[in-house]
Length: 255
Image 1 (tube, rainbow, N blue to C red):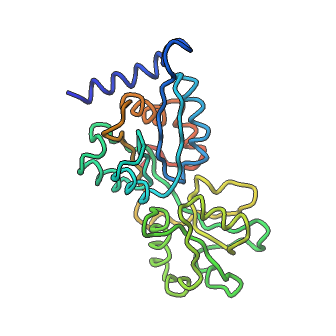
Image 2 (cartoon, rainbow, N blue to C red):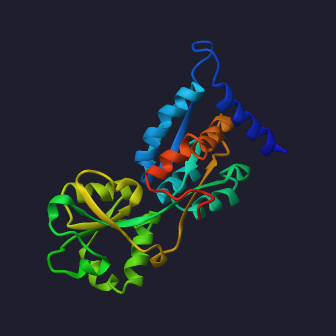
C-alpha cells in the first residue's frame, strides 16, 4: 500500500509546491547522481526548485562509489545510477525503496578528442595510431561508462593494444576533463557531456557494449521520501524529458 500513498504525496509536491514562502523551513533533497547527468541536472534542478519551493543539492560522481557510500549511510535522499544493476542491488538489500525504482534513461558512449588535437578520429581502431599516446576512460571497476568503454574496446579487438595507453578517470566527468585539458589524446565518454566547445566526438556503435540502462530510487532512510520521489517524477515528466533528450539520452518508451 505504500507505493500509491508515496506517489500521491510526490505528485502533490509537483502540483502544489511546498507552500507559501517563509511559512515553514525550506525543504531540501540531496541527489546522488552519476556524473553523466551533470549537465542535464544542472538545468533540471532550478526548474524543480521553482516548481516545488524545495532546495536541491546535487552531488555528482561514480555510480559504484555512490552505491558504496549509500550502503554505508551516505547522506542521499535519492540515487540516480548510470547502471540499473546498482539500484537493483540496493533495493534487494532494502537500502533503497523498491516501490520507487524507476528507469529514467539509456546512455550512449562516444569517442572524443580535443578540438585542437588534429584530424578527427573515425573509430575505435584509430586509437591504434602511434600519434595516440594516452586514452582516457572512466575506471571500469566502479564506473558503468568505463565498463562500457572496456566492452567496446574488447569487442572491437583493440583492447590489448590500447590498454597500455589507458588513463582512468574517477568518473565520466573527470574523464572529460582529461580530454578538455589535453592531458590525453583521446577518450571514451558519455554522449550527455560531450557537447562542449573543446571536444569533437563520434558515436560508438551501441552493439559493442551492454545497454547503459539507468535507474533511480529513493533512499530508504530519507526523511523526505515524497520529495525525493517527486524529483524522480520531474526528471521523467514533461519538463524533464526534453532536457534529458537534448543532452543525448534515450528515454523510457524509446528503447
